[in-house]
Image (cartoon, each protein chain N blue to C red):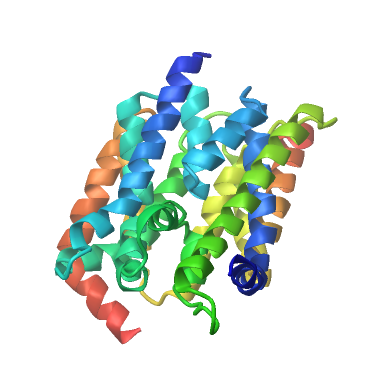
Length: 232
Length: 108
């Protein structure tokens, strides 16, 4: 049964493989450049397993951030997972036990985009099909990050400035969202409130007021956000 | 560097990440409908959070001392330009990071 499930799942995961290997390597190299060897990259890719959060975690670890600020950062950055979960409730409802627990742990942006659209072929149980998509995806991410951590030790050139990969990742996601959505109000709220907060509170303290301001403004303007989205 | 604190950070980030993935299944695993406010915020939050993260990444750039944020401004422009042009995530990240490394190592 498993062979059929793997055969059905693997081709779907190939695009994710390319992305995860490269982004995972970037993460491993970045982490290594801050003095955390490859086993840290492996550990984090096994346990946290959330791409953009792991890039931010490099920052939190190297700065020795407080546990509370790390928890808040994780909450705001990963709040989008709540909505992946909500939309997978029905599809995952019949699945039980350890497999279900793993499916929930493995619900990254990329895996979500695969499992929410792909249907298992005839003769393959949906539990096995979704399980193998999720497991293959995580194995690519894990492999990429460990390879990156190992490469980081032997890279012969000056890596000053490689931190920009994290900025670039978020600029790309932001640009992609901007291009695919007609309503830019929430993107502008995110940038605007954060800049104001940065000016008011300075680089070390701006984040929490920014999060609070964003949550407040999105709640106040939620009607307009919803209406424009519906028209778009 | 404090290994114990780093491990604690990884544990906290893991726990909160798992919580955000598990909560919908715990709260709405039955037949209850999620509240409208949650659904509306869910659609809008990702864009706002990405904007916040871009500002977060650039928070320590000084505009009042040389090089006045020029390497960052150029690299962000390259990143956006590449992405609008080719829509290829890996190309945009690799290209703009290479430009940034070149700028901070060899130019400024």
